[in-house]
View 1 (tube, rainbow, N blue to C red):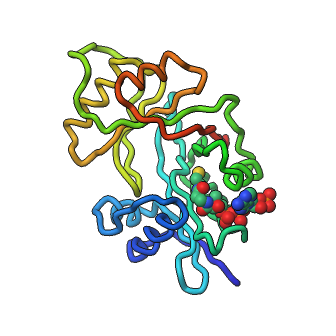
View 2: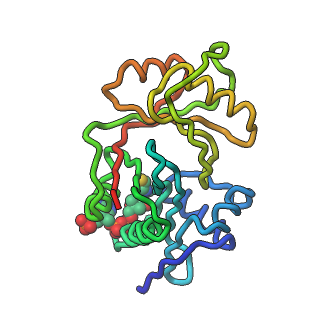
Amino acid sequence: MKTSIAVATTAQALAIANVAAEALSAHIDAGSPRARRILAAGGAFAAIADNQVVGFVSNFITRDARGGRRLELDLLGVSPAWQGRGIGARLVGRSLQAARESEATTVRALVRCDNVAMQRICSRQGFERSVHASQLWISQARKPAAKARGMTAARIIAVETLTYSGYWLEGELSQGAIDDARRLLRAHPERSLIGAVVPVLDRIRIDLLRANSFAPMGDFHWWTLRL
Ligand SMILES: CC(C)(COP(=O)(O)OP(=O)(O)OC[C@H]1O[C@@H](n2cnc3c(N)ncnc32)[C@H](O)[C@@H]1OP(=O)(O)O)[C@@H](O)C(=O)NCCC(=O)NCCS
């Protein structure tokens, strides 16, 4: 069966949402302006077989701590009936091509520690796995815990994905950084959550996130490819 990979279109939003539900148990609001915006901007690729969407990947660019362009491999899913035929690997390969075309300096993916298929894809493509595992924590609270605490060394990265829009906290996580992100969330009602990824060994930061009612979403490794 011939499978083709192409830039996803807004007309495929519903089909992509169906694959996301099947493969990732993730909800994409196919009719939302955000989904339309992301697809219209060419931020996703679709795998087509039998005239239907059987897989997709959606990516976006953030800046790393040095200001370099970084492609985030954000959501990748292949319908269960089509898994194990090389489609996931091709979707990642097409994303790497897009990263090079956009002059990104790195590509990264946050992969669950038990996701063997994704780890094999990353490893074959030359990604390096972070030495330590990390935990992903998220919060939807908008109220800062404290009054203004001033400067923070963390970076607050606004992200817009097919499943949510919100803020990622990177770098030196502190109460001030969490409060700053919560103020931003309150000022932007269309954004829904704050995410932070911290090494599993960093008990101090994990305690801080827990104290701020962040919820743990599991253990992951960062997989990074330098271009
Ligand atoms: C991860 C996923 C996208 C891979 O797509 P796919 O089309 O099945 O992957 P491929 O056929 O390209 O296979 C990639 C590698 O994983 C291996 N693999 C595939 N399914 C596997 C499984 N269930 N268990 C172990 N290895 C598996 C393949 O053998 C291949 O390894 P190889 O290159 O060494 O032979 C797909 O399994 C999926 O949608 N999973 C659920 C969602 C998900 O985990 N997304 C990624 C989040 S970061």
